[in-house]
Amino acid sequence: MKRTLLSLMIMAATAHAGAQGVTDAMIADDAKSPENVLSWGLGTQGQRHSDLNGITARNINKLVPVWSMSFGGEKQRGQQSQPLVNKGKMFVTASYSRIYAVDTKTGQKLWKYEHRLPEGIMPCCDVINRGAALYDNLVIFGTLDAQLVALDQDTGKVVWREKIDDYSAGYSYTAAPLIAQGLLMTGVSGGEFGVVGRVEARDPRTGKMVWSRPVVEGHMGFKDGKENGITGTTNASWPGETWKTGGAAPWLGGTYDEKTGLAYFGTGNPGPWNSHVRKGDNLYSASTVAIDPKTGKIVWHYQSTPNDGWDYDGVNEFVTFDMDGKRMGAKADRNGFFYVNDATTGKLVNAFPFVKKVTWATSIDLKTGRPNFDDTNRPGDPTAAAANGDGGKGKSVFSAPGFLGGKNQMPMAYSPRTGLFYVPTNEWGMEIWNEPITYKKGAAFLGAGFTIKPLFEDHIGSLRAIDPKTGKVAWEVKNNAPLWGGVLTAGDLVFWGTPEGYLKAADAKTGTVVWQFQTGSGVVAPPITWTEGGEQYVSVVSGWGGAVPLWGGEVAKKVNFLEQGGSVWTFKLMK
Picture 1 (cartoon, rainbow, N blue to C red):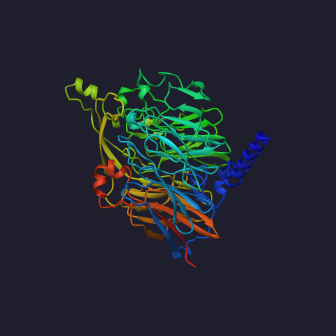
Picture 2 (picture 1 turned 30 degrees about the vertical axis):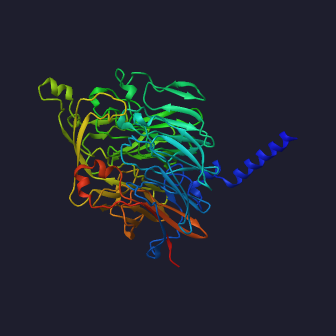
Picture 3 (picture 1 turned 60 degrees about the vertical axis):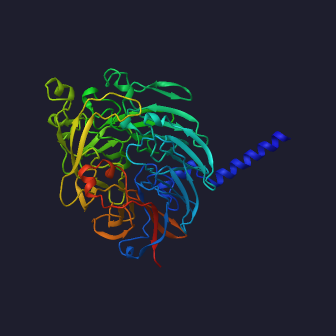
């Protein structure tokens, strides 16, 4: 009798959770469900498009703020989070590993969780967090000390907590987790510290590991606690023991396409930056890897920058879409080229520059998929320089884009209505040189020096509408400061933010700016939209920071007047 009663209680609890919580079906349907935002990218494929068209170019002059919530305290710096919305609650992360639940109608703070961070964390590029994931009645996010935390959506209480890796070795976590096929998929951060990049899948209800797939060739994968095959072939593209500290961290997170059944993760720079100590392609760094969530194995890969010597991480989001009757994927890479690949096979279909100056390669060979390098633009070998009596510094070169990329973490958007991608771009270059380097646990593993410089007087950033078939720019809106926030398309409008503090909207077909609002601090986060009570809302996080003021050289000086902040703004049409 007791066993029967207990079984009934468990079944009732499970049924209640299933009825109230976020399901796999809801996540799969996220892009078509206007009443919520359940995934980073407004759908796991990452298009950041909504068919909502209640806000138009004709009535957007009535779009006004209905509430703003401050993250409070002195812990600000960069705020790069994309909020999630479910059943009247908004879940938004903030700098220093914080997360808040907010009433979507009023902006009232329902609860907050502040992760206790240890001394000695080593995040590369500011203390940011890009968002959370929802599953069942949990909200799950990662922390700067390389942990995953799952909280009850209603109370904010910790349900489970799992360690990703050792923060003292340089590991951290800043991305929004991806949920697909009932799995919680994450990457790691820390490529500047000689970590080993990998993608992992866990049970989202418990945090238990299902599989782990390294994305540096030579390392063993695991599934259900057992060996699951080495990634690639040891020493095939990494000399000696360089693969043991190979970097390639997939720090931006991934996308998933239901039509192909594949998860796509971009991988970061190889370690160290000095490419002369790791001669070879250095798979699978600076690549897109397509992983089968069922097996945890790499189905295909495409490497955009073999033997990367410029810190051109390939982490940028791989956005799937339909073109000419086929499922494709597009990436605006940090190296300045825009790539279109067959999403099922990885075959390169198109590649072209999306910024005005690219110096490291002259073009991409569409037959082989490989770049045509300009060998004169690779930073020199410091070993050769020392042998020639020139000291320990290799030959300096001026490269474009700079290492902060033609596009960086700020996600682009795709509109099926126009067939265009809306890409936040930056025009800058860098003086870069190589230096001798040896690996030391927990220490920066660069072997390079650099200075970022703007290329033009009148702008650094530019939002560009790009045709993936032709590579032509349909229109652009220039911006004085770098663009560092993401993009949203909603109906026939495009929304994006600027470091100067504006949330802007433009006509998606013409690029005519039709609205802007000053949020009080720089916007370096992607906007969202949803409906509630028959009304369309738009929200964005405001708070200047991120890599630009930390690493930006002359560019950082140009934007040092910008103020920090930390808040969420929500807008709707005034009646």
